Length: 599
Image 1: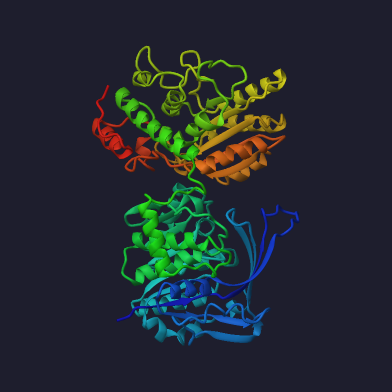
Image 2: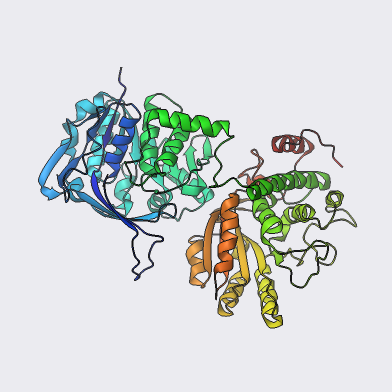
């Protein structure tokens, strides 16, 4: 019975320099550590498979090594068969120059060397290995004609195929697209997927559009790894998001290859692709806890133990320290979500999805970040918060209750005569700093408040939350220029980037926002990107924003519409619709509220 895996790909000598941050264009910074390490997607994936207990045929070509013994040291493994591994001393081994910051990512410059000399004829000689395999893994760090031959032979022998798209900047887009037809699985990160589909992917919604486009070319399962965002699967069932496992990241270089190797092993063991992705996420998380693409690749036992512990803990927390602040924010946010469901259930109208996506940010602001006094809402030295996306008012009202501005009973008057208005009203609701509802105006008001603080010599900060659809408004960008020109470093904007608006994705309704980070940087803003549901990241971002001097800050918070209620998440249908009685009960039960009577 076939049970082996054939890996066809690259082998490199990695020269890694670790720095505190990545240098800007034209800048030189000092490195902290220098490492000479074995690498290359093919070699990394072969070692990953071997350590997970599978026999693996490794087909690759190396040349002359700059430092002998390094690239081969982990390939001398009892599970790795090198019968079809080629050495060609007429060329240099591939070299990767890696600049890594650890958890903040890396940049790689690749000299392909002997990898470019791996030919279709070399693959034909390895057909017996392919025939003996359950899965063939091939990457695009070798010539595309060689990739095509590997796929053809795998399909000829009824072997499952996994293509890992990498080093895409060294390849012609159309050439790569030409080999996709009939593939079982294609795995890539958001940069590679964006290159293939000619769009910038930095959100699950734009990732889904790319995945659907690639599926039309004949791919069965498209998997896009998106770092903190998680992993996206697009197949015949639609789009599914898998959240990453939380670990203390030391080096991200090997994460993708560990993921690919583990997915291949799971598929060879006849696991469903969704289970394979979970297994791959665990492997990818573990390898990032050590320096080097191969050094930290886990064993089967390590992955199984890791998953067992994480599942026992109720899934991994994406925090370094699960401290009292985080616990408090989690509890508050959960209460806020329950109250939002109840509010809209009572009102039978309102905006649900965007309120739920904003909860974690707003909870952090009112319960940890902002300087406020519920006993004195008009306190002149208080920090200000403007909900520019005013239709998310239920989230603001829920936070005001948690902070003590008014009693919970008032929430059940939402959208009723004499009760809470559907959008924030500063004249009627204690704790509301600005009346909003007409989109695009909040940042302009924030500028005015920030300038007033400067004129009066007051030390308060102004926080303003923008919706992602909202920043299609021209006034937002006029205000952004003013913030930067006036050097309003007491302004902190937050973009609730959940990717959906009105009745579709941002790209479908009008136009995609990307490259959104570069746009704000071009307007001379300090830009911080975070997972908008990771409390540690949220708190850290607000602390970092306070340190920025001479320029305003925007926090790009990548969020999930409908966050917290599984059947509402990423569903545009819940943008402006209240939940039914049945949906209220179901959602509240999921959030931990067993009984509730509609008030």
